[in-house]
Length: 233
Image (cartoon, rainbow, N blue to C red; front, side, top):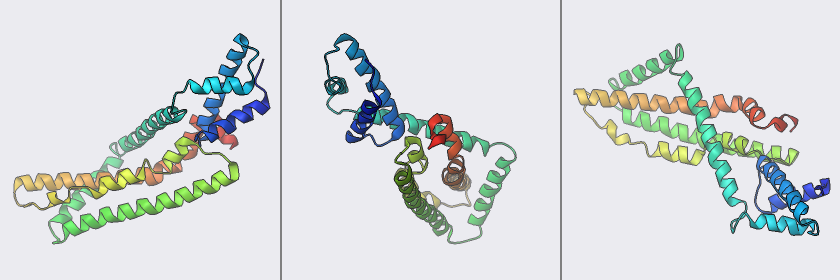
């Protein structure tokens, strides 16, 4: 016996009822459940569809699909981080490396001519956090509007437009050890620390540019590569 189209739709409904909100993961689970149910029917043809479904679902354990969801989130999170890293490497090749060196040198030079360098760095980081939060809210609104239109959510798309876990990134920026700026730039250690700090701040801005601009602008390419059916979405 084969699973019917009506039963396939029931499987989609079943996954949603058990808190699987992303269509790509729903699709995989539905395919797995349908094949497993058909295998059961070969051995026990007297089973009803619902009985076979419940037997298969129990194999996922007490927490149901939650472990599968977490595994997929972890895997796609790693894929997203790899995308960020691959784009970041491009900034350390000619000619973009010149931009990085110039930005670091400029920030380092500014530190010697102003008395409010600490406040400047705090302000730059604060601006980045505010931008991150605003763009996260805007992206969430766009995704909700898209979901209302298509009825589908895609996990990688959600990760891209949450900017790689915006909350964690904001906390990382907020916890940046600003106190290392309280140094004597006239001694050699102070100068190297200042160079390191300037490089770190510029690097954070480069990563933010990749996260906010580069990857979202290429999101359609990434999504089509991961989900062949996304182009029909």
